[in-house]
Length: 86
Image (cartoon, rainbow, N blue to C red; front, side, top):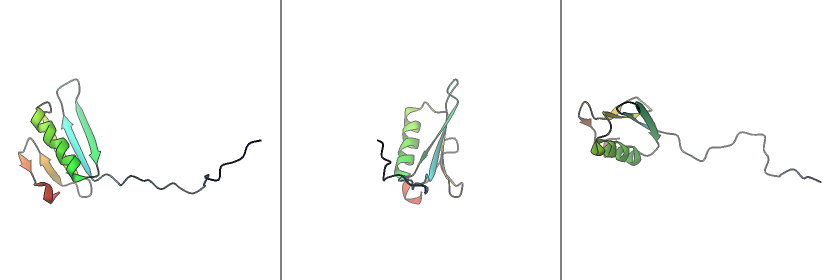
C-alpha cells in the first residue's frame, strides 16, 4: 500500500533565492568567446569583475545593473564606479 505525501501542493513554489541584480559580461579570446554570469550581491559581481581584470585573460569585462541597464564597470572604457555606488 502506498500513501501520498502530505507535502504535495498544487500551488506554485516560492523560490528561496533572491532575484539577480547584476550581470558580469566577459569576452575571451577564441575559442571561449563570451561569457555572462549573474549575481544578486554587488560584492560578488565586483569581485568577479576585479579578478577578471587582474588575471588579464578577458579582453573585455563589463558589469551591468539589470534593473536599469546602467554600466557600473567597463574595462575597455576604463570606467569603474566605487562599490558603494552599485
